[in-house]
Image (cartoon, rainbow, N blue to C red):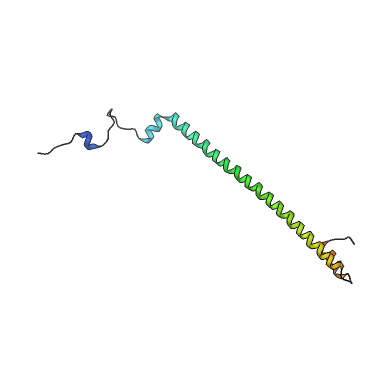
Length: 111
């Protein structure tokens, strides 16, 4: 003699009310307001994350600009020091041809 199990134990989980569970689309239709609110809040969250990323990108760019400005000042200072030392070295030459050539090269019209 075969023993048969009750249908609720064999078939899987059923709702206690006996109704079939709603699918995703039916759930969305039934709760339109909640889903619209969920998607609006998700959009706001994504926009906030994007603007936060842009804020830090701007901060990094301003740091980079300050570093480049400092490098430019250092390079300008080094170029002026090299120019002055070359002109001083050329001034010690007795003929002065090298000093004249350097002034022409540097665009220095003084002296």
